[in-house]
Image (cartoon, rainbow, N blue to C red; front, side, top):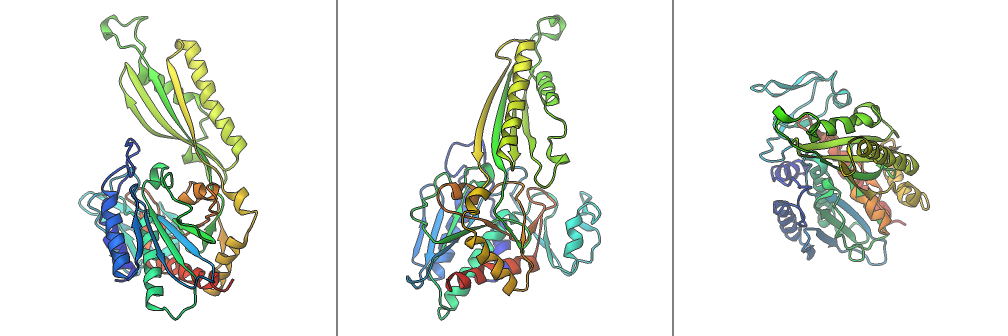
Length: 405
């Protein structure tokens, strides 16, 4: 099976996670892909394969026990931001830089002027959606590249290396990817998540992250008799949003700038809820953003009465930079591998998070590698076949280089 055959097979399996679920994994359909991966690993002749009760696939391709062990991790779920059901991928050969028609019937198109990354992919073969779903390159591209690397080393036992460990996790998109991860079982000398974008980017900086659930209690009264009685929770929600700094919004930020992102809003006149994610690379600035929520709630409670606004703020994960910088050998391995492949290494801070951020603080330093995917979480998501192949070649080369240490 080729790298692209794998990818197309995997994206057709619906693995959307659900932030409202309390089960692990949050959706049983993620196990559909987990079981496929278990069977494929066994077919490759790997005996050491396990699907945990919480939906994590672990596997180890045995090597020379005197050499260092390297691990690779990718997540199976797709974002609940857009449907991952009935994904219909299509390959555009030798992209010419023009407008891509994703769905003629629905008039869904991608224009290069609207999506600058397309200009960097001229001449590449692109895998796109039909405009009605996301693609799932986040992170099925990473899974495909890891699986292809495993098959390469199965077919080349003559190449000297240590153990290769892999893990495929559920629920990364809802911040629960490694809450049940067995670090002791996965124990290795070096580990990487394969869950980024460009092939030449290695990331060891990410957002500090928190979430905030805003509960708004109103009072519904017949509008004909509402004067001085009605408290419209929907209008309170709009007012609460207006109290937050206008430009602390992902639509206005880039680079190291943080943001508050309103993910969902639901409710009636009587009761409403708002869900936010809060992000910043600087922990002190993140605390300031959290205080903005607290101060806004305090103001509205003074204005409309105590209990009108209640908050639930939860810290999600931390920036792994301070941990990784203590020993940069794990980054040097990647940079040297890129140079050997003729790539120009780039460090880029992640404007998001990965399983690796939490694993780092669980004692498993785990920077992030690219996958060749773009514009994640929506209908315009696409992947470059050439970039995916470079990412696959990179993980192959990392294994080779770790064996030389």
